Length: 168
Image 1 (tube, rainbow, N blue to C red):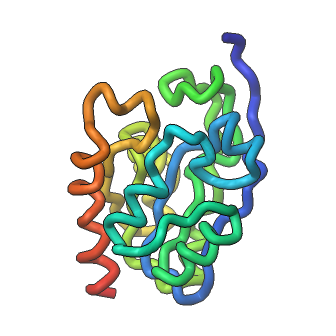
Image 2: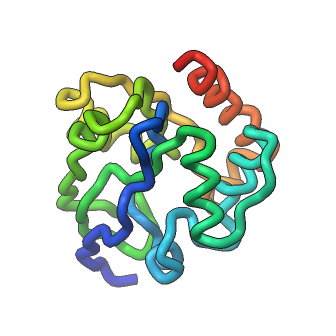
């Protein structure tokens, strides 16, 4: 697959009541096509969050947006643009970060979580200093990650969100 320069086209999801921020790297081709985060049908992100938060699985983009805001969760990606092959985070070159600090300033976010090691390393390298917030690395919910984690394993890992949502 050929490398492409991708510009992030999805707006962050947040409001003034957001307490935690979940960051991916970049929207996948399927997510960009669907116009919302974690849009690949085999990505378990929405199933994991609905299980962890004991809430109905959101289906439409608007249901997903309301779901996040109801639970005080902001959602965005570390990168504004990059060169990438498909959805392969390991192929990312020329990363340009989003202004995560500006988003944090508009909210009550006190903790940042990343969906995968690549998002964590990019956040740490490009954004941590400006936000002043450490990040917690959670497993990727991508179908490619199922070689290493079952959906139940991922759900157990994501339960840490509850601690931070209750704390703040």
